[in-house]
Structures are given as C-alpha cells and as structure tokens.
Image (tube, rainbow, N blue to C red; front, side, top):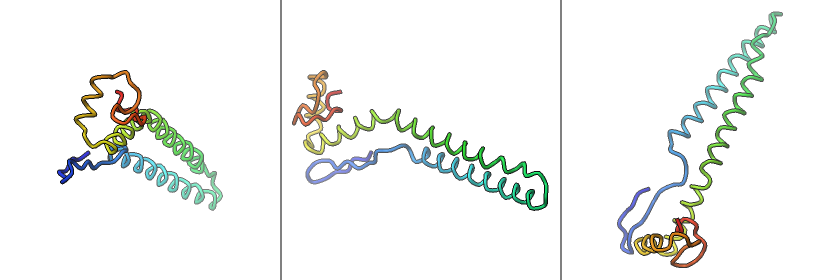
Amino acid sequence: MDAHPHPDGTLLRGYFGPHPNVWSLFVALYAGTAFATLLACMYGFSQWMIQESPQALWALPIGLLLWAGIYGVALMGQRLAQAQMLQLRDFFACTSCHPQLEEIRARMIETPEAKGCRVCERGALACSR
C-alpha cells in the first residue's frame, strides 16, 4: 500500500493479494513439477520404445498427484486469507465513500461493536473492527 499526496487529500494505491514471492514460489513449484514429470515421461517412453520395462512412466501419475497437492495448498491458503481480504476490501470501500480517514478511525474506536461503516452505515465490515 502506498500513500501519495493528492489535491483532494491522499491517494492510496495498492493491491489485494499475496506477496509476489508467494506467487513466484507456486509458479516455480508448478514449473518444476511439470518439467520433472515431462523428463521422466520422455525417459519412460524411450524405455518402452526399446522394449524395456517403462518404470519411469510412473512419474506421470506421481506428477499429477503433486500438481493436485500444490493446487490444494493454494486453495487452502486462499480460504485462510478470505476473511482478511474481505475486511480489507470493505475498509477501502468505506474509505472511498468517505475519504476522511481520521473520522472513520475515530468512529471505529468509539463504537467497536457496531456493524458496518459508522459514517454511512453501508455495511463495510472492516470499519466495525
């Protein structure tokens, strides 16, 4: 998140998502698994073509299971972060409706048990926490 001066106040710029290193890790895991599976399958088909037992072809189902496991871990991470992402989205929706961030912050402290934005009551959950 970056804050930049603007004639009407402060301009906030940012993105909702994991750190780029997390994305890079998943891309590397997918690519490494795909590359290793491809090499093993090529070796297995070579074994098959010369009438040997193609033991290396076992890499295909193992590689697919690894891909499914990586995908499952990614889904689990998304599910764990879902509440926080919704809270961030609602907070910034509220601040875009009412750019007086200090007023919102003061109202958040005054009545922490309320639901929704205390400025406009539009239902921004993050403003109530």
